[in-house]
Length: 286
Image 1 (cartoon, rainbow, N blue to C red):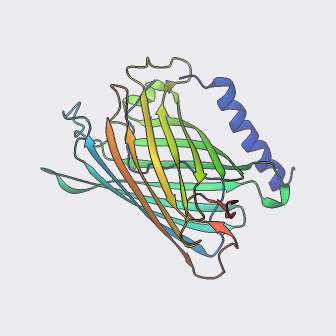
Image 2: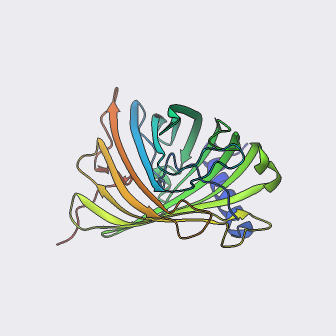
């Protein structure tokens, strides 16, 4: 039987190849509860990452459609707890909530997300990991109540530049989206270290729809965020941004923020780790 690192390598490569060979741009509603492009690093063992994702939609869907509440002026607060298992794996858990005039504060659902990464000892030229997320959300917030996602993650630092690509695949297990089969929902990030503590750039999120029959541009989800990461400490993660949705199927304006704290309950944090971008910290050149 192949060793665990070899099996992990094959799994990562197979997922990436599947995306590259089959992906083609449809659209489904994005939850906008956790708006983040993942870096490849995992949380260190005996460390707990506690994050609060805050997303507000100043301009979104204004009508109740098929029993789903409108997104306009919704405030989403998501608690994310991620525990490091070993040097190459972690498990995350999400609690989704929503606040809106007329509905008050509501629990939306929960997800669980195990993730594994390529160990540093393999000396790959890029960071690579694989995340799998499954969970439930109430039907008044999403017609698709049970969903599954597999997310290959690739990232790279080049001097002051940082780039990440998440070619995610999604599958609905309960709801009208079951008929869509597997959908393609990629995310990407590019950032530049303007100072030792400030990285700024852009994040892109999309839902192109079915792999075999993509939606037209009018119905696709397309979001572009101008973002800033503040690298104040290896223990803290701070990300903020403003996003525009240019297509009819997308909320047109979203403001997001992430504040995270890495609680070390057994080990010291990895030396040189850069908070906010999940990558080793390098001082920018003068």
